Length: 227
Image (tube, rainbow, N blue to C red; front, side, top):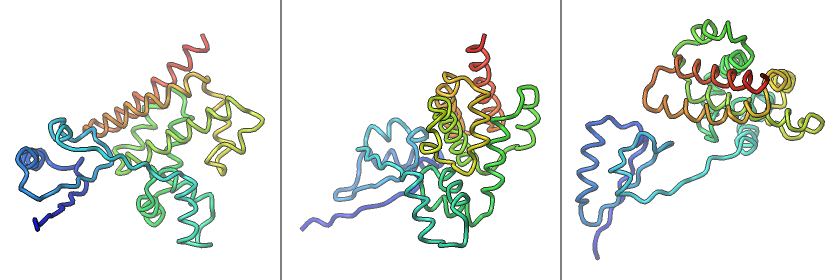
């Protein structure tokens, strides 16, 4: 019988250019009976020539509720549910990442930074961005911003029933404030702008510039809707 081997490569989206090129050469003429399984959280950073030689299997992230429930089972009564919710929201649907956020203790800073960005006056936005700086937790902050704008959109659409639909229940007052400060269409537009920012960050753009441009564009959209 032919011997078959499977080689698993984690974080294929974070490989250095020299490693990517070497991998491409192997994929062009793979050894007989050898299969490669590439793990990645995004395909943006993977060479198109590599993607063209692979079959993509997309695994959907866990829901925030699923991650929160898992954290409750793991940590029991050690943390309140609102804290676990915030960590789950910032994790992008990854339980391991949620645990890192929780145990690392930086979830409080993440949530405060996210709301400060959303609520800051346009004139104060540059100073707020400078204060946050080149955070190590770019992806987590973007995930929280996406969720906050999503919850604010639900409030804007259903002011009487939003409590049942929002995910960040512990922050409903600040979410209501954001809903009042933005138009409906700008909150929809926010998701598109955050997707652009996530893509730019994947390609190592300066995070502070990305996030300032992202929030500014959302605010400009809101002002344009009002005028």
